[in-house]
Length: 191
Image (cartoon, rainbow, N blue to C red; front, side, top):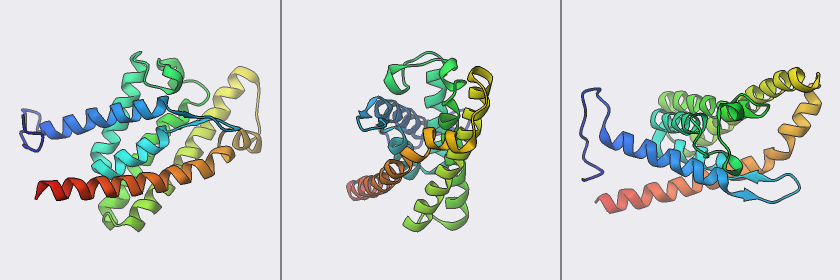
């Protein structure tokens, strides 16, 4: 089957959209398993989310993030450390994963309004990351307060956000460079 063939089913969804969304959910899964050992270990999950959004656009990219979360919620071990389950999503740090959908929505809105220039992509992904941090931190504080007692905003930020800002910005830059290069190769091969 030709992946570029734009067949549409009864629901109006193109086959190629389904394929790209599924492959992108797999990419996010694989990158979530890659752990970079530092003082505060981090995964390449955020890189994959940024890359998928840049490659597929806001609509399909956000759908890929939603599929990734649905797979993990259903018990398929796609989250960091080969974990899964609805408990991970509703756990203390699950808000950051749900926040990836917000990042996708911000990206989708910005690129729909202002085009897909490098500046628009970088700013919208950075704004989406800030929204993801805000949503995830509020979620963390709520769940942590229920299980362990109240925690202050600065404590929550120092645990969950501050150590990740520089690595996440580096992943954002790397994702934009990677997706631009992949897009150029795809366009060249389609000629």
